Image (cartoon, rainbow, N blue to C red):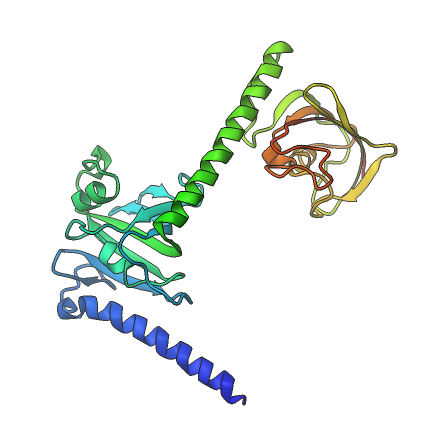
Length: 302
């Protein structure tokens, strides 16, 4: 066996053992007081359990901004907040100089990227520290909040400022795009409500033939245009592809086609996030943040 490989393996194992030792040291003096099975309690009435060890190589410092994958639940196991849904996969937390006793910030300072931890935090401490609010009525009767968190990324304050600036720019552009779509719909006296995926339907017929499904060969004709009527794409001959194959059509068309049958047709507005996005097309013919109109007809499904 390669000695270099063995050395790297032993160093990695030693680092992971050190991380576990540091976490255990935070709570070891109260290890015997386990009121929640599987968790360890500290002097602030706070419970902790390490779920998984990451492969990061540094711990955060005061002032750093942490990107967490987080799920917060009541003691009765009802979800209060989930970063995958409410947070669009993003829960940012700034490590402060001073924190309330009983919050989990001191433990975050011992973590590396990839670590996953489960905490039980006193209700009042949790809402004051992380939401700057009093506990809501639905937490009445709960003494603790369960917080399952994974440290995804460590950013300095300057790095986070750049992230926020870029995110705000995207939000502004998307709002401008929605205003353009809204204006188009008003001028054409159409309904302004998109479906749950964000697509606007101007006309549709599902069709009566074979339904489209994963792996089926779909033949369709289509045209694409900007909202001002300029055409961007006209199929000189029908497009034929295996449904579900990546990058055959833009995401918005893929969503629409998946709900249709042979003989079906549709005229839709696809927002840029389901078309060519914030970068536009590779050849530059479609600018960033361009909503597009598509007219499609399903000619065959086999």
